[in-house]
Length: 247
Length: 247
Image (cartoon, rainbow over all chains, first blue to last red; front, side):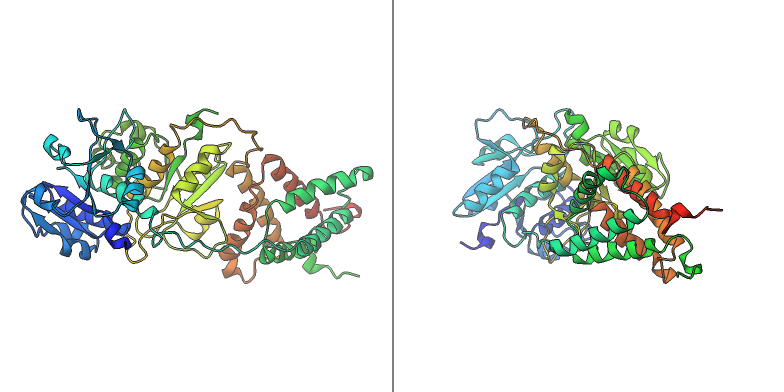
């Protein structure tokens, strides 16, 4: 099954403000979701207020499908998840967005996530149509997720299971070979010895061990080792070295 | 270590609109984060526009601390994460919000997450102050996360680790607070300037950024910072300093 088929449909049930539909579209597309369905949007559809807040998620807005009833909107859906903020008196499994994303990714058939109207959420009979409930674990003393935020958390979790959305990790330069590091450390030790840093003399090995640990810790790459040696070269000259002719 | 100490500080750097500060506060409190710091907010602070969009997150708004500079805002922070949308040409580890949350949860010492100004994000020198970069893996063809959305994803990921029993680990020395690191870096910069290291002069900021990255990478602890400053003190004396009477 292709990832496009596994991607959940986002269904907004009786959304009120076009702005919020636009924000939901933006949230979706950020994480690669494109299929939006609207059930009985209060102000009709298309809604001119949706475009600006979608921040360019035209593909989602233009492709949005409108239905009169939730039954029609979900007729082709195999797995329906209802989002709720508060606990409901229904006996359905409750999952986190993360658990739902994992299930959706593995599911055979189409999945959809329902989001209720801005002020009051999904009605009991709408929740009743779903197989499972998604509840975002939230601060029990301050639960104030808006529609687009609820959408973005679900879309974000889904995207984690998509190889498309996997981060192209910035390849870090490998740390410098030990020989380069040793050269740098030897240079520093010579300078420090020159300044009488190693005192008392019998503690020299211990002190050098401490410094070696300190300078090994960064795992500097070759360029960084060169930069540090450049610093040492400059510092070696001494204060006002430019004005002193060295014999 | 209590969970309150582990909770990251959210630092908004040069935020423009009070509305967005309010939305960020709301996003934070939804997932139990309460410590907000503002660096040079464009319209000053307090900002009457922040309250309404915070949706009642008064505890966050009222407790927000304001700083003139990022250095001051991070002086007591041990682990700084910078959020960026695009790839940066810096050699720092890049982690997802989830990986960062895991690290923050286990870290010893205080963590902070930096978010840049709305339009352009963090400046290169601000990123340079951070130990690691958080990038939200996003649709490569449509990356349009706003400030509050970036905050909510980081806060949400952090909250997931809160319910888990925190392991009692053998703590490594925490890395030094940023203020100590800044002091060390300033000392080196002064010495290098004295030697004419920053040449040509117009490249100074770029060069300093490179050095800052280099010296931020080790995550040296307080003792290591002191040792390095001791080295700098000795090197400052110049070659054969012991035999020269300084005027």
